[in-house]
Image (cartoon, rainbow, N blue to C red; front, side):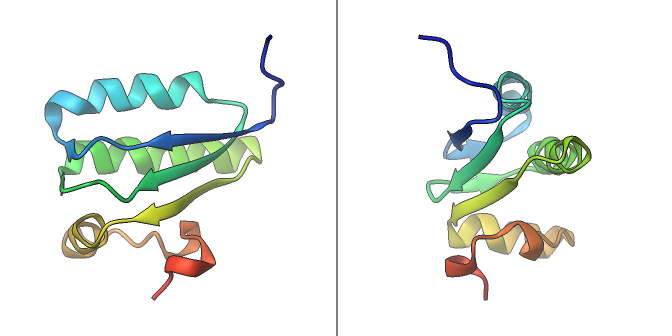
Length: 99
């Protein structure tokens, strides 16, 4: 059965988001374009700047498409790394994980 455009989709991020994972992440996100997306970053242990760039570009693309793009769950490692590199995703976090 074909999925309906605009349906809520979820994406669970890999434990290690490094340069090698950036192209996979981009491909996975591209396949979800046109849908509301909830990202699960609860299992992330390491994240590199390249994958952060992919995620932020996706957030911008979803905003331009007027579709929700949120982080439903996020590990401490994920949130701390974003904070260290100066990326603020508070506006993309689910209410339950906002600090």
